[in-house]
Image (cartoon, rainbow, N blue to C red; front, side, top):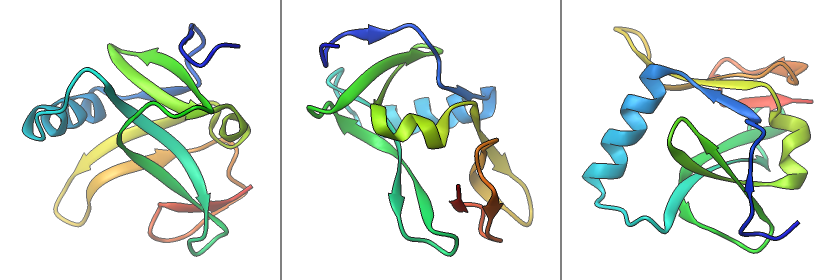
Length: 117
């Protein structure tokens, strides 16, 4: 598959709250149309893996997805860890930030940004 091919399958879900915050961040940082939302995993964290979430430009290994109007970059090899995940934004008294609800996680840590598969 070509790296500039838009994939129709939505591997993850962004809630309305997450979309609102992502649009706010995108606008505040005055990012160009070359920037998309990078979602992935990396080794580390309390439970073995931690999530990657941020704006970035496309890399060679990326698949491109369009999710609710956002261009999303994800390495194909990360899909097995992220497929079906929901990203939400929580803005409460005790917790504020992005949350990850991942059906592939066998364990998560208390911080909610680390998991094992």
